[in-house]
Length: 167
Image 1 (cartoon, rainbow, N blue to C red):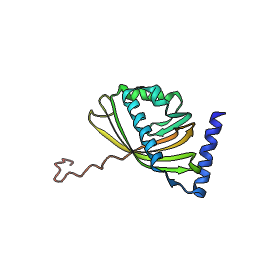
Image 2: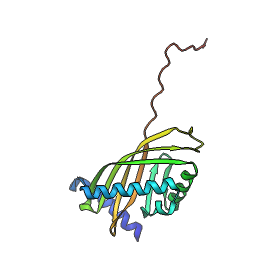
Image 3: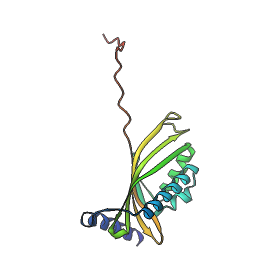
Image 4: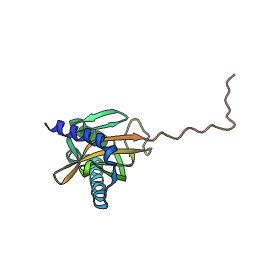
């Protein structure tokens, strides 16, 4: 039943967005989301999968460069990135109220580096953007869906005076 309700809320949010026009959330709501994102980020950095997972609805999902993640996979991902020495920061740039304040669309930026990620050199930093759909559960806001997008790395600059020996 719960997945149906959340799916219905998300569908209504998308359907109503053009009609109701997203509005900037009030300062109190934006501050609440900033505090939530800060606590979630702290839990991820500490490898606290139970706390990190508590910020999501039971049927939440995420989409990033690795694909779609949901349910228990989200907690497992928290443990995995902690083992890789994650250092994550998040900034909330925008919070918009949708569906008469029952849902929010939040967006911002992130930076992340790892001390032990086999795919990166220690100290390399990845930057990107995130977007989350949040729904009200009781008095708390919970993440129902999130998308994380890395920024493309800078294009390699052409070397002037290259000593290529192609013959």
